[in-house]
Image 1: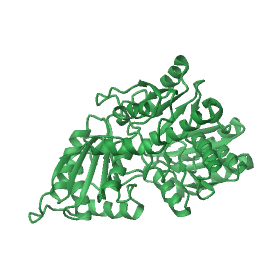
Image 2: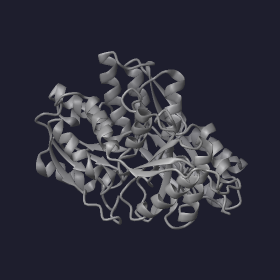
Image 3: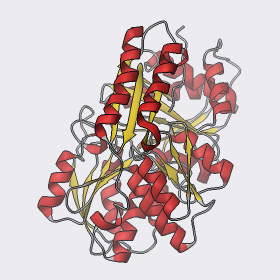
Image 4: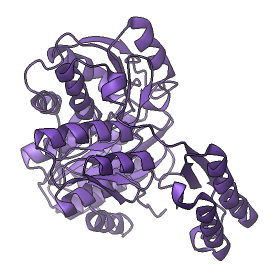
Length: 442
């Protein structure tokens, strides 16, 4: 029995290969059912990957054999599962997705009773139960498995409630659905909010999710926005929990820029709580400088929107996110959602009647460079004295004009080295110092 370990955002891997195979998913379902108790309700959703139905069948079989009652939501954005759990008082929500990864990957995300992802203690308890000996109990009453369309309706209602009426009336948008979970709901929701919507990459075939499209490959969207004379473009990832945007000139608007624009608006409207925005160590130094300039603090946390969510709760704030486009707005949605985040930004354009290139570019990001190094097997590079010394040397090179970050990837066997500075040459020099030290360990 292979040990199953959670990463930054659930469990992820190659579909049909442990731990993302039928046997493992059945085992995970049984473990989850044993934790939440017989008769407990679980919502299960998936994105558009070809492996989704197979894994869904295995997972729900495990849940049902453990006594849980399952409602299958079909293809839905990740946030829709969290919303359904909270609305229906369910014990658990599970989403089968590998987010922005290619179609051959898949994964599993868990949501607790609050509608948000499991906290670390809950996740540790589930991981321990999965890796213990689990046996079917013939005394358990087998749970029901049913399908539901209510999750789609709950999600659409939540998005529209985040900006009531037709706040996007007259706006021309281009929407890139990444052939993913947003394909079936997002275009209709935005049209009902008043926008004229042109849709790209919304014909999923199980194999084309995230393929040269969506938030990881926005080039086609950028070209189409300018060619169509649209007001803005929106790009989702495969499960629609992250979003990047494009201005009318084709310029890319990442999560840091969205956070800055929304924070400024919410502060002016008096709805920003905590006098702070939460972001990760990857967020650009320019965001921190901008927020300080409008009297707000940037509160940094570990990479992963689960950590952003935990910090928001700790300090009583209501806006946070990641540079990659995972935005957190707990007053509007219990988990991160790309469409709700996009609507919050689009509202600004409609209300100000100003172009996206002006409103959604509130600061100039510092040049930021990233280099990935394959994790040396059998070592812990983050604790190695040579890596610690290299990082300190890189920080000395950057001085007060920049910063360097060295961290293991939460989803891949890589060490990520990032440096930012107003001088690109200095940033690259800092990265080389660390990557050379990492290469020497290999």
